[in-house]
Image: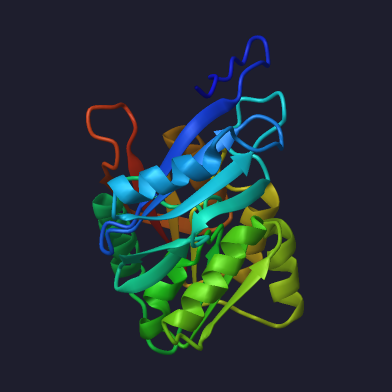
Length: 273
């Protein structure tokens, strides 16, 4: 008897029912998104019956979103039953996922997307790799065994904590993750004297911030891989990078959303000699 939330009136209790699954582990997270910060009626009975009916459910987390917005998740999570995170395996890396961790919904094609991006980057064991907009660190950690050092940057604190935990549980010691806006992170890396040979960027739908493109130019990497889920910002960023002295070597599309107009792309750039 939970009431459904109505965006028009701001009334109601249950805004969304958000599910995550680790396809390699079978672990399922159930995350009711609730308007306000109160408890759900009979929430303990709900948790017990759900866990009993579905053995794959190992995590039930309440997310509180009291704001008048169409953004799905609020900032605050509350563990109702089980553990706070679930695990999956992607590109050979065991990844820990919280409700806020970015993770592609099409895991099979996401694995193909990341493996293709790393293959295009022609990684060498002497390379320093910079992974911008790194999320839970999946791309950088998948590359860690092929390169000398990985540095990642992400603005979402929960995702950075997941990335650090993912590195630790996979015993990856050559990866470092920084919680900061990517434009600020690149300044810090530059001040520390870090000079990446390869940069991988996987920005949000709006594309790369202008400051990030400028920093990429200043880093002058041998190879640059850009993953994009939106062709318009990708075309804009490609144009700017070409002006900055990069050459587009190859563009590979990867379809993560069959029967829709959406398609991810990987752009490989090299420095113009």
